[in-house]
Image 1: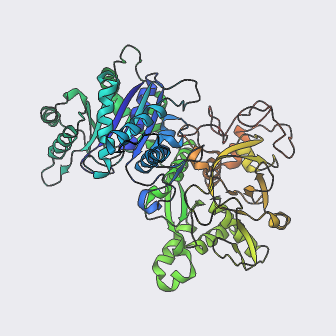
Image 2 (image 1 turned 180 degrees about the horizontal axis):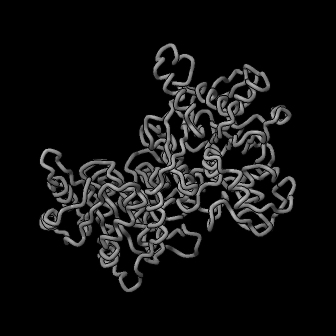
Image 3 (image 1 turned 120 degrees about the vertical axis):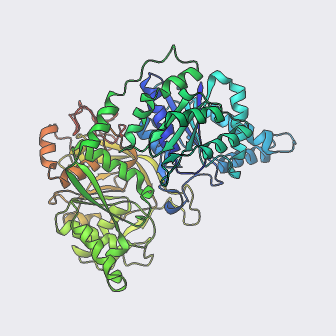
Length: 601
């Protein structure tokens, strides 16, 4: 096993995650199998209880792991499926060591950071690196490890020490260190300053790690004299100093690395020059250039609670981008704080209220993503109502689906007190209820998490057609509340159809309004499986409908198959991975499968 460690210096937020993902893309394009590990030096055992304002979105894996959003970048870029153990946190390591101490595994020894914590970190890395993540048997060839935070952080010290020991133990031919640092450009003189990077590398070397490659973030390409200066002071060959300058979209980053021969430098350090081929990045090049060339806009109103930080909805944004590129449209996201749509805001801040409604009414499509808590819920309900009544394409995810159900109950069924027990535990008309298996006292890891199977109840619905007329899909979940099954009959009699259910048939997964151009709500999170070349089917439906292309897409790219009736777990038990016993029909994107079980980027 070969290891590539990516560290960061000077400031946080330089793009270590994208850099690590892009390194993986280039190595994969060289014919190598790649896996990834993210180290987060915080004491939380996982990201599940962290505020989106604090740390961005919580990314959910197939196995139910609630992890850092960088693992989403790894999955999207590398087209892999990671596990919860691919995200190492200080909390996990300390919990692991303390559990061993309580069992007596240390035989009475004094348990210390060195060697017990550092040994546990190294053992964890070696164990997880051997887990196949690309659907093939056997371990990967290269493991890309990203160390979160910045060199010099107190929280990172045990990991720095462990990785220093690890690099010595595995040997120089099996370990490559890429240090991402900032080279600022002073606007007054326009000079690229190297001193911050010099200090960062000096600190890194003082902690026992020496970089093999420098990846320098800057607004423009590094001058040759700047590279020579960095080479002299940082003891890194000039040929191993890479510029990560600003680009129109992040799909250009692997191309930047390839053009600067970063793969040659890494392969040389890892003694893989005779094994790997020249990187084939034709598809990446075409995709990056296509994204740059799009000018015809499609406007999507994102109605949410955490609109102040785009990373709170990172996977949703990426899924929208993947779908818009597939539809040859330039994505424009209008952020609409849900609280600004509410009547109370009209009195307190009329300008914000007016601006929010103008954005909503000017959008081609509306998306209400997942969320928690009652703040801004009424605004989301108003957005769903506007979309339903005005035939505006709508996609509701998790809470967005529950909101649509509540709005339908109030407006169509005339149940004015309809609500979720999350927002009003004493409501007389609970449309959305707490799931029996959940916990109200422990927040972490107690939701319905991970990949779950959804069975289509009918074939003549937009969701089933978008997924390729499969009988079921596997999508990732993260929720504590569900649609009240006792009220399903009332909803369906009024025109709201539940076209997808779980294996028991009692848990509602997908809703649709058949008479609406595109009004879809899902309890799961389809954004987590979207990939650049394989957009999420439901996001593709939203974008296509918002462009007025949905019917044309369906007619052009889909073929009706024999009716399969109501699907159940016993039906198609011998079906293929995409859930269909027949040969899959062509999906919406030429050359790609758009079903929910495949990989997307």
